[in-house]
Amino acid sequence: QVQLIESGGGLVQAGGSLRLSCAASGSIFSIDSMGWYRQAPGKQRELVATITDSGRTNYAESVKGRFTISRDAAVNTVVLQMNSLKPEDTAIYYCDAYINYHTRYWGQGTQVTVSS
Image (cartoon, rainbow, N blue to C red; front, top):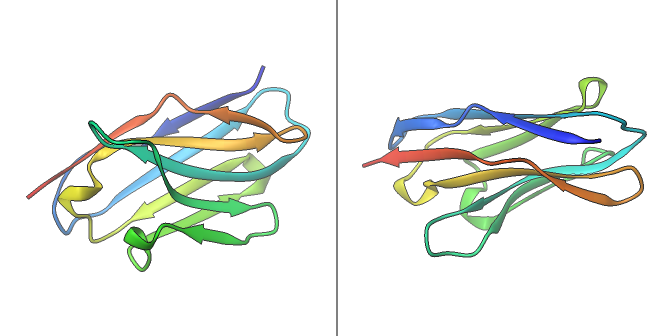
């Protein structure tokens, strides 16, 4: 059984920073890509950032220049460094990963709240 465990959410003032981490565990043979999505109240889940096994990254326009995604393949972990946070970044952030031949997994979500 594969699990994604997230950590690092919390409450921060606008302009501040947070670091989210997601570790994949279980019977893992390969990880194709890992990423972060978010869902604000009343809105659909949206892409934040993804990173492939080759290190190629993709960011939502709204976070470019402020967020950085990185990956440590040795420990099956993906990190999202979030700087210059804005109130509109408030959401539940979910880690996702394509593992073991393109099976998609989701984490349980971690709350990020940015106060103005």
